[in-house]
Each structure stands twice: as structure tokens, then as C-alpha cells.
Length: 396
Image (cartoon, one colour):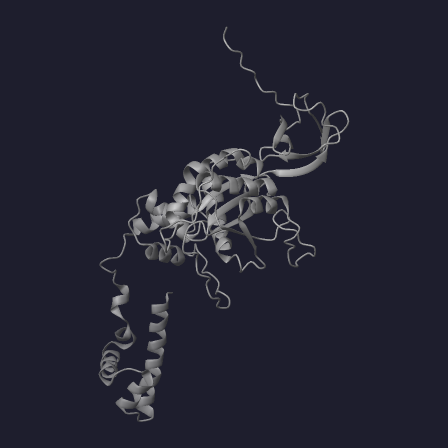
């Protein structure tokens, strides 16, 4: 029984009680109407109907009539069936986007929302917590970016981390991809994609993950004097990093991840995608363009803070956005890096590099390089094998 019918039942029960009071306690019409909270003429009309027709005279005949603009039952059942069969567990907003875009639905969001709630398919949201003042967005694109990651599992037994880099000014996501586990390389890759496509930005807002910051005491303040590999790369690029000390502090990115967690796994499952690489292709070509078009907001200032990046030697972007480690060359002109032995080839520039201090660059794709100052002494694949340059022979 809906709320309107319940209120009608209560009104009838109350009227019958007041009607008896008027007869036994000699209440005036004015007093009886005041108790019921209605006008005197309304009370008189109810009395006449009650005396002529009894209980039925007090019923509101409009409740049994179908509204002239009511949707056909078949249409209502079609929407409910669509939600139950194909889009089960989708949020109402996500389902409405599918209903409108892929099934050419013409009804409003409010109508769809009401039908799903009325059918008991959607649970009303819990009451929100204490009021918090919303932080104003940055007025221009490129002033501040957010980067974060969250775990997703749409394939049973397979869990991958989704790394997202987005703009604070308008919610646009510049980079989004799955990795086995987030870390330095995945964070550097996100920044690299942004710089290559848009340019250098001003600030980056992150949590206090160990690959972003050095934190001497768990849960305490970060140490800005001891940079991580990621922090060193941002310093070289002139990008200021801002640490977040609570989930509320990065509420904008947290809300965005809530939306992504509610939509992306369902879209991937709907498309039948089961592998990480296939998911990344789907994100880049289909999901992300549509998602940005749906959730981007208008910026206050059209001017952008992005500064174009040009890969001029020796400041190639790859040689900044990488893990740099100091090593000393051994007597046999080799460098130990992890469990790999990197052999330096004979060079015409120097007889031997034994005991020289060098830097090993580990790139995002896992390949390696040895640098002596700005001179590259050798490049190596992910297994540590030397990549020899092909020498082109001139035609005679």
C-alpha cells in the first residue's frame, strides 16, 4: 500500500472518531473541522457523504483512476526487465545512461528512478554524514592534477589496480590503465602520458603511498628532504607535489573512483573482456572518451596552465621519468643491477670505465641504460642483454 492510500485510511478513521464525538459530546462543526485541520465546508461535505454512502462515501475516487499521462504497463515492465536481466546491480544513474543511449529511452531520469524504487530493485541511499564545505576547483586546466589507484575485480580470482590521473579543474581523466600492482613505474607512466599529450602541469595531488613519499613514521608527516624516485622525477620536471592527509582531503578523486568502481567493472563484464591488456584497449578507445564526455564540467577560465614539453637531448622525458640508481663499474667493465650483470662495451672515448661512478636508468617498460654523466654507455633489454645498434653500410 502506497503512502497516499495509507493517509486516506488514517483520515477516514480520524473522521469517524470526530463524527461520533460531534454526536455524543455536542462538538460544533467549527470545532470538529478545526480538529481535523480542514475547512468547515469540507467537513460538512464529508458528513453528507458518510450519511448517504457510509464508509465508501469517504474514499477518494481519484485513487482508482489511471492518470492520463501514465506510462503503459508494457513500457514499465520493459524497463524493469532490462534492469533485472542485463544491468543488474548497476547504479540508477549508470542504468539511465544505458537506457537513454543504447536503448533509445525517452523517459526522464526521475521516472526511471521512481519505477526502479517502486519495484523494490533499488535500495534508497543512506543519509549522508556531517556537512562539509566543498573545496573550490582550480580555475584553469593544468593547475592541479590528481593521481590515485584502486583495485578492481570483475574477473573472479583476478585483481588489477586501476591508475588514474585527472584534472581538478574539470574532472577530465587524462590517463587511465590497469596494471598488476600500482607502484613507481605505473605512476610515472601516468604522468608521462599526460605530459606527452598535454604538457607539463603545475602541481600533483596524491596520497602518501610509499612510492610517492618517504614517511618516517607510519601515518605521520612526509619527509620532503628525502625524495622517492617519483619525487625526484617531479622535482626535475618542476612539478610541485602535494600530499593528502585524509580521504576527505582528496574527496574529488575519491568520488571519481567511486563512480569508476560502480561503472567500469560492469562495462568490462558486459563487453565480455577478461584480460588486462584487452581492458586497457577498451578503456582507451571506447570507455574513457564516453566517460569524459559524460562527467567533464565546465572550467572557469578557458586559458590552460599546461606548458608543452620538447624532448631535447639530454633532457629526454624517458630519462627523467625512470628509476635512477647510482652504481660503480667493476674491474671487468660490468655493472650489477639487481640480479642482472650489465656489460659495458669497449669504447673509443675511454680505455676502461672500471671504478667509474655511473647511473643505471630503469625505464617504465623494464629496459635499462647506463649513463656516465650525459653519455649513454649502453642500453639493455628487460633481461639485461645489450641492445646493439645496427650499423648502416654505405653503398659503394
